[in-house]
Length: 318
Image (cartoon, rainbow, N blue to C red):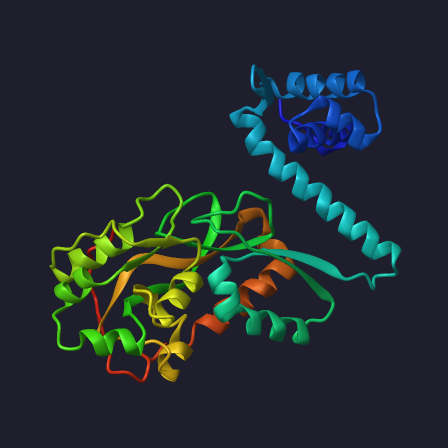
């Protein structure tokens, strides 16, 4: 028998949300200003209604079951929307809507800040709560919209490709002057390789992919690893080594001559930037507006930088 909205267990859902967010009955009870025993009874009643366990006690502490992990973000978002709508109505319909957006740090700093600024100018009633973390794929925290750096993949979220990353080796002009005339393999062997850390991936993955695309043999595991592409590129600008840089993200540095691109080929490395949000939010006008805005801003053709580069289409993805 299906659950009818007339009998939605709102108190039990609030109790589950509090416990699930804190992974503690004590902390959840304190957050809701109720007794721990009352909170526990509500969670048990919700589990009985659903016919499955939502939380599991382990020696290391409380954990969400698979069902609990699926339900928690839905409940949290539903209560968030109710809270926002009620506050907007209470304010006479003039309350600003807050949109929670997550972006990788290099994208945010190099490209997205002007886009977010223009969005705010165009839609001043929509507040933006922007977060950033050094992750590949979805962030740990719950957000309305996330731009993620990842390989192509499918999950239960709506996914829009903003663009595929196009990379080439970059270094300082001084470093290239010292190495000018060397072959690609010799140049890479003679200089420090700079890496960007990817969650759950080996440090040399991107360089290994590039070496395979170029059909060269290289020790791709050596060198320095950084949390962000910006840090790796800044180290390269300072003359510290060779980075694989996205020619779109760092087009200004290439155009100014801060970065030199010694070899003309530009490759897609199999990673891209994707806009993701929950399918149930397709009907949310604010999320739909932000989605359209982002897609439009990244849909323009991307010319290669002024330096003589050429895009090589290669299917050798990691």
